[in-house]
Image (cartoon, rainbow over all chains, first blue to last red; front, top):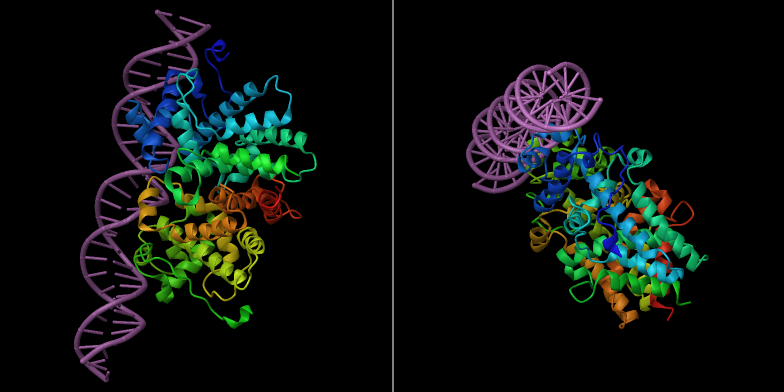
Length: 225
Length: 225
DNA sequence: CAAATATAATAGTATTACTATCAAAAATAA
DNA sequence: TTATTTTTGATAGTAATACTATTATATTTG
């Protein structure tokens, strides 16, 4: 079925960029290569100057798309969550049983990511690595409240609340649906991180995936009574 | 009982600092005031120069205690987790029932923090705010593997594994003890953050605490079968 | 083809993240 | 108490970062 759609366009709020990078060749190159460069050297060491050198373009040209590197990161993460949401909507269409819906949603949100060939200028496998390591940095800042007000995190919050609605369908009496889902979505990134870097405090490895863990978790919490 | 101990000393690995800040008046001032300043302006805006001005001391003097601000943050977080571990050991002595032990541990790790008067130069209430917002930044870097190898995160990992041991006592068949505890400890910080800044994706508020949520979680997972 | 727009090149500023050096002050040891 | 060692403070300096401004040159579009 996937083959029916040959390319997809992800919508990002225009408050995050100065000029929409999807509207030009240079813009797309900025997105494509920034993902690769951030993955390579880490967001802390990433600068627009280095990116400019990498894409054979000038620093000042990049500033015409993004005010600063923080906003570029917000953009990339929004893009990622939007893509996840897109996949989720697809996976849930025509599925009625709420428990089955939740399970599918959990899979989408916790599974290992492979590149989506329908998106020319974004490598989702690499972008996922960036989100695992850097997403927290978009939220945990002194400016979070203003940025939240302006809508920087709507896509992420919408995704969470989409899943919360399913939990409420399954068990309307469970009083922690929001905390449960926000813990799972964020916690899944963390388990993927621990698996790679701090393996002594996770059970996840080549055999056991974060999906296994969280699937067991919701099974216990929402079914067993 | 607490009153018996009038002051406590937290042990931090000497690999994190150049000179132990606990050994001098200036060192203690660096710790005390850096906590206040980071809380005020955020770690990203925090510099040794600003701290120097704040404490009437020179930038170069601070560099004699910490190589850079990242290591200072690692120090502060290690201090925090060590203090948490200390409180936990106390709260668990002479308690035999593992479920009761786990519950007490969960409370220690998820509850709202108030200042511990026994520590002269550290305000734990403020330090907790820093840990909530900045702790992730100590882990999620390009250097995490080397830093982990050198032992920057032992205290945190030891705390987690202490709790994992209790879970294994309660239910030796549960296959995700490590992931469960690492999710709870890290997730608790996140719920505290969401409560303050992204309230639409958490159930925690003035009435419902992260402790309530996670207590319910372990109750369901480890008791109900 | 003209006009508008986008990009590149260059230069410049304030701040950051340090390092090096030397003098002054404080602690300690003889 | 003096001499010595250690600690701290002051100053200066460097390379990199995170931008802004200006102007010239392409490129697109009408």
